Image (cartoon, rainbow, N blue to C red; front, side, top):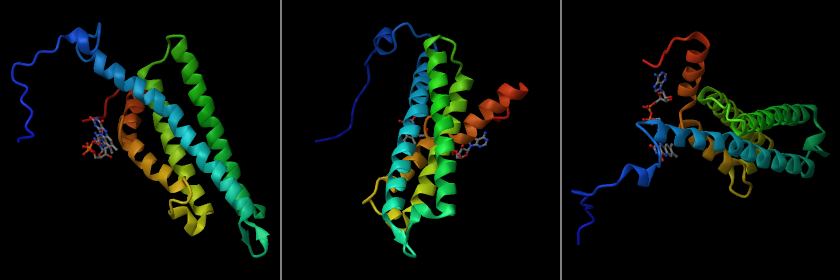
Length: 176
Ligand SMILES: Cc1cc2nc3c(=O)[nH]c(=O)nc-3n(C[C@H](O)[C@H](O)[C@H](O)COP(=O)(O)OP(=O)(O)OC[C@H]3O[C@@H](n4cnc5c(N)ncnc54)[C@H](O)[C@@H]3O)c2cc1C
């Protein structure tokens, strides 16, 4: 038995794969759709992390007081809630632009770059609130953090989306 896949002579009509697509517009359009989904998905992961951290900090007692009663903890929670709220508003705004047929690839880049970056930062901060428990799979935070590390790289790395925005702002492509 061989696992080799022989594709000689196989033909796929273009319409069967991406109907109506010409050149690279089809594949690039697919990537744009996937990135748009990530704008929302990253916020879902961040929300789960934040809710977990809020519950954990309320339960966990340190120096005879709940962890959530300390100012440093509350600053972390407040900052994360702000970034989560801003990211969700950005996602909803991009969704409305998409529904209106006015969403540009650069705006999707802005959404993907911001929301994945901030979601990862939220996951990392939540992990600190859970202390050593934060590195175990007993809680979902480290799983989200590791997954978000992947999301930071796929569907356009954060560096490339930064360069997309740089080009939009300056008119100069700095990719190469
Ligand atoms: C979990 C996961 C799933 C994936 N799934 C898929 C998939 O389904 N299909 C698919 O095709 N690919 C997939 N990928 C691949 C992903 O798209 C690539 O890893 C990504 O594009 C980066 O390419 P690279 O790993 O070759 O890194 P490199 O291209 O070697 O880049 C390394 C680093 O250099 C940076 N860099 C590159 N060019 C520049 C530049 N001009 N200026 C400044 N910095 C630069 C990058 O941002 C990155 O930080 C997946 C990756 C992961 C992690």
